[in-house]
Length: 427
Image (tube, rainbow, N blue to C red; front, side):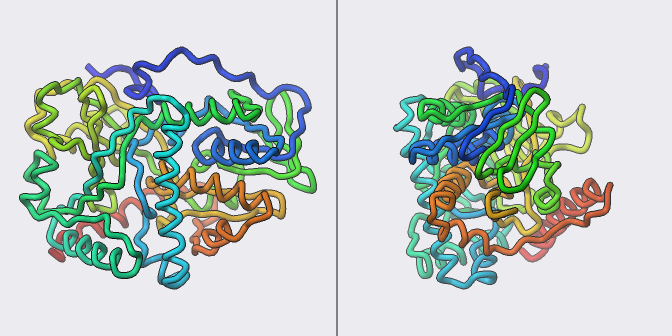
C-alpha cells in the first residue's frame, strides 16, 4: 500500500515541526524583493542580506515546497546539456569559465551543509553515469578525455561492465563513468536550512503568499490577496511556477518527474548499491536513483501518463533495473515539475533594468541553483559579469498560441525519447 501523495514524503520523516512564516499583509517595502522560496531565491536573498541589503522573499506555499525540496537529491557539476553545446554557442573559453563556476556551485553546497550546522544527510561516495548501450559508453569516454584535455578536470573514471557492477547490483548497464566529487543529500533539509540561514541574516520571509499580479516599472510591486511588496529591484526565482510571466514561461517545459521510496532494505541495500553512489542513466528521458540514509531506494524519473498509476509506473521501471526488489514494499511516492528548457541550457537574464531571473535548470539544479543565487546577488551588487556569461546562452521559445503548451510538453518528451532510441540503434 502506497501512502497518500505528499510533496515531501520520504524527506520529511524526521523533520521537526516548523511554524509557517506569516503571509504578506498590508503595504510593505524593501530594497530587493525575491519571488520564490526555493534554492535560487533563498541563496540570492541570503547573499544580498549578508551584503547589507534589505531583502524580502515571497513564497506561494512554503519554502522548499517546489522542486528544491522534493528533487532526487543528487548534486552534480556541469549543466543538464553537454559542454559541447555551450562551446558551440559561446566558444571554448566561455565554456571553460561556465564549467569552473558549476564546480564552484557544487563546492559551495558542500561547504554550506557544514556551515548551516544541520544534518542534511550529505553522502559523499560519488556518482555514476550509467550507460545502457555501447554508444552511450563511447560518449562518456569522449567526455572523460575532453574533460581532462579542455577543462582540466580529472574527476571522471571510466567503468567497464565489471566496474559498474561493483557500484550497481544490476545487469542493465554496459559500463559508465564514476565521479568521486559529486554527492547526494536530503534536498528538503538542505533547503529549509538555507531558509533558516536567510531569516537569521534578516531576510523577511512571507509564506503562503501567492502573487496574483506583478507590476513593473521604476518600483516593481508584488501583489497578493492580502498585501503588496514594493521594491527597487525584483528577483524572479519561481522556475516552473511563473505562468503569469509569459516571457519566462514560454522558454520552459514544466515536465513532471516522479519518485518512489521503498521500505528500508536492511542488508539488501548492499546488493542494490554496494558503494552507496547516486546514479542516473544516460538517456535523455532518464531514470535516477540513490539510497537514503535509512536504507530506502529512492527511484525517480519521468512521470507516468496516468496520475493514478504513477507510483506503479515508477516501480515497473525500478524493477527493470533491480528485479531482485520485486517483493520490496513501496512506502512513499511523490513528484512535481522540473523546469526543462528546449535545449537543456539554463536561462538567466533581465526582464527590465531592475528585474532579473534565473530558471531552466532542467533537472540539474541542486548545486547550480545555489550558484545562480550567488550570481544574482553579484549582478545586483554591481558585478554582473559572471551572470552575464550565463545570460549569453541561447534560448528557444515555445509558441505563444494558447493551449499549445501541453502539446509542446508531449512533443518535447517524444523528441527526447526518440533520441534515446536512436542512441540504442547506434550501439
